[in-house]
Image (cartoon, rainbow, N blue to C red):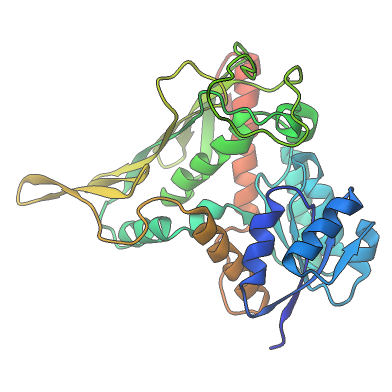
Length: 352
């Protein structure tokens, strides 16, 4: 089969991870890139050897050499752009979250069904080698039935500002930006059970903490210390149809001693933490044993994760792989995220 022609929609910071991964795949030809800011698209095209930088979306979608696209834009444009690409006959990899709302996610799922094209959700952490290894242990039954999981992604002063701090474009704050990663990982490792109830809280107490100037932080190019209307902190308890439960907490701003990343799943025969590094707790001969696998990467590595994700998408487009992050699971994650925000606003548990 000839090489897959790729177009990238959006030339912001995350597009670089997609572009460098596509550039490293021998089965890919980087055909086109489009951004609202043409100069930015031209810069990325020159940097990564993309053949065309287009001034409009219509030009990119009309290019017959583009077989598939990555969507790397603001959250509020994901669904609209993905639907347009699907209807133009392109396969789609869309960055997480799938959309801004559940209604948009459902429209996108309908478009996938209607067009018969492929859509992969950008749950990049599913593709890391430590996650793949943990899933092998779970699938082999080494942990038994998973009945509880903990997901924590805490930043003390981690609000990037710009569109990340704009609820209209982002759809929310840390919950929909970084919390979605650990929520998805735990849910994926649990076997993607059906959620039935959610009890959530969100807090708007600290803002973006622009007053803290002696700790390094990531800031987007349009960072504005006075602009922030998203939550500082969110937490939630999610119950599933099979009786399992998941506890989630995530923040941009919190008076915590240190940043924290924790992904843990716990079963009847053993447990495992995927982050901050992969390790298992098992039982043998009436003894609890902590096991650290001897592997190159015990934690998530951005370059490896994105390369694996892109390679899988390319293989999917070539008919050589099965779906790992289908649109249906992106819809379910959006249901959980939206239910957390709804529960927080109502001050009570909500049913899905």
